[in-house]
Length: 488
Image (cartoon, rainbow, N blue to C red; front, side):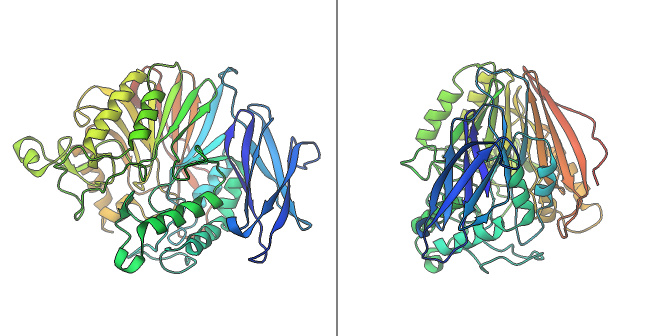
């Protein structure tokens, strides 16, 4: 069971009933002001059917803003555990503060979800999941900590349903969902590796069948198994939306994976260049919505959630005539053409919109399996800063350092030195840590804490505060805080 997509007066509740494949069963639900569910404020019933894989979504309304509630389900005499959720502040309510947990990239087969368990213990109002909630394929050339079910890649609706079910059986993910409401967006691995609208690098039609059919199956399973509603009930593929965090901030959630994404530049990594700059990443409809959302200064923070990294990230500098001949963007050779690096005209357009926020915007990104703080600016990061970007580490997927730095003493230090040398707009990077980020948001300041767990190969309760960075309203330059001792 889980809760998600909270509003000032409601929340979406989710559960799944384990019954015979063809059964249809009633499910009762209760929302209360206490953990014993002795003081109910809302209740009702729903039906679990084979058509939705016996998952149940309940949209509860009529609740008080900025209030903690508890909830539970009952079916055939069986009671679920009791979950906790929280509504959002009212738009005209007191400012105060909001605390958000931010996560991404949880690979079941390559590590335990220790970061989820530690985030469950944090005092946050909401968890933002930036995608790769599941992985549709095994991790090549990686040691497996535990086996995926079903084995191999997900291609059909039953495959994706079973994979979601396995992830939901993890005790650390269950604990996270039982403690906090979640707002989520998909990235590529909920569908297939390096996906775009028309296909995926991880999909071969000769062996894997029809891509639109696989895409529809993956999205349907995601909708069934995630505690979220539909921004547009007529369009199951629309996931971009805005979550109003009271008077403090707007959480603007992009879809940088499906809606409008053109095929990334192909080739071996690191990709040499992007000669055609006008590749599309967001759809025309999404751009129209985003331009309206960022039309003018509101007095609130803009938290822009992008599954993939916005800042230019190079391994080598490549300016001047040589760089132009190679098709280099932003003064360097790009590492991942699936990021905004591979869509330079789209990034310029986005930065133009963020400039309207006057130092009141923060981009939150994932996908890169590492921790970053960067200044976002025009001219490939060399211009005046317009906003900051915080990139969150993976929960358990193999890290950036593991992918690019061999297991040789000092290789990680050399990698991070090279990153800083080729990317002066990068204020901080840690390429090896797994974990999560906690954002503390007030009207005048945002503080980000990068919490790293000490391992993912076994269950552990040890974590450390790797770094603290903060922003002041009106100043897009992130500033370093003081890390605190670890928690054991």
